Image (cartoon, rainbow, N blue to C red; front, side, top):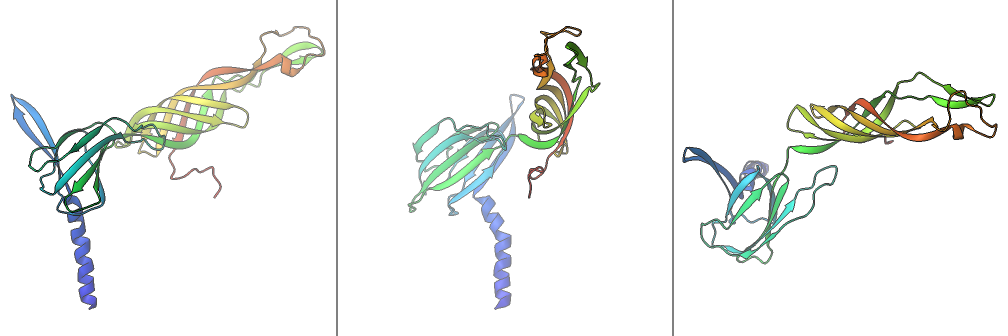
Length: 281
């Protein structure tokens, strides 16, 4: 009895993947027409295997859809855009293809897959009340990646005006760089070990909030080098006053300085983690 049970489990493990992949067959063939290479792509759905729903990824391109079965009762196709992760940038869109019925081996539709395209097929089968759902989608190699790290902002100037004996004096701390903890969002190709991309993010050092934007280089998907410009607000000398100017005793440091937006270059490094490292467990 135990041996029989083990054989059944073993057979299920071996043959289930074969049945799974046999439900939807994706093919690509090349032929030469007028000295040009033409690529023909097709998707064939086998209705003889009963399922509730299935999802299959495909490459970009135009595909002819075949459903060679006399069991086909109805077909409704919806086209959507696959959402990016973790930033939600996709939108539901486009058309639904009206119901049709095809009892021959001709293509029932042509599906055009671009980056992040999803087709949802609702197929009615003769003898079944519930419609089957087939999801076929393409995904872009480019994705949004969230990383955490630090950015060095250069050419910062922390000079301020103060009042000494009712005379304006400028104090300089000599600091020309600020290091800010940051969270970065990078759009890059995750299929490559070295991928250039675009990045933006936020940084905060308990005094100033900075916004970063620029270019990035992803290394092995988990390390991201970035460079660009930082926009941040700094407390700077008020241009209404000058060094050596005599002022009234009622003028305070808040009057002598004011918050101003500055644009400075930055370089940074960040790392992709499986969860936010700054959140307490």
